[in-house]
Amino acid sequence: NAGVMQNPRHLVRRRGQEARLRCSPMKGHSHVYWYRQLPEEGLKFMVYLQKENIIDESGMPKERFSAEFPKEGPSILRIQQVVRGDSAAYFCASSPPLADQETQYFGPGTRLLVL
Amino acid sequence: AQSVTQLDSHVSVSEGTPVLLRCNYSSSYSPSLFWYVQHPNKGLQLLLKYTSAATLVKGINGFEAEFKKSETSFHLTKPSAHMSDAAEYFCVVRSPPSGTYKYIFGTGTRLKVLA
Image (tube, rainbow over the protein chains, first blue to last red):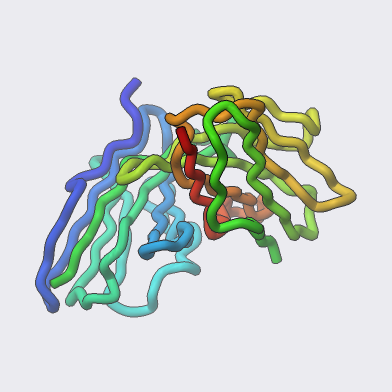
């Protein structure tokens, strides 16, 4: 059973460009979380999604950031008009729909560098 | 509100000596607590979790943690450090089950193992 997959692993963007980060959850998992890790800091919650629904986006910046988890395909975290402060590692985690829902399994992360 | 405090940002031990990484939590609910490890430029791996069963929790790679409600602590220990244990360790509390299961991370403890 493949783990959580994220791509790209590394992404370089210039200020003002768009960044698209993809996350494929573990097989059978229907819950996806996105976290951001700034340099030398812990991870901060951004958004929690189930298939086709955003459940909790209390950690998302109000502008430029959006997330989706369509019925088919990976979850996407989209950052429009990136700025240098967006440089960070972005981690996706997934959990199963029942029973062990509280354990999250993390992907390897996407490291975004904004020049 | 839920929170965790990791009391040491850096810990150095010699190979073969015990490891103690400290974590205190704050929660108005019966908490679920986790320890994750992050090796450089890698994703997060679950070491162990406490979910209101046995207070002494055994994890992978010889790690264990004890939930102490009276001290609001969940310290991570290992009897004998190995060079491969050098990494960043995160203590995590899960938010109460009110529709979201987001994780709240501590700021991390970087473990250095000396030969």
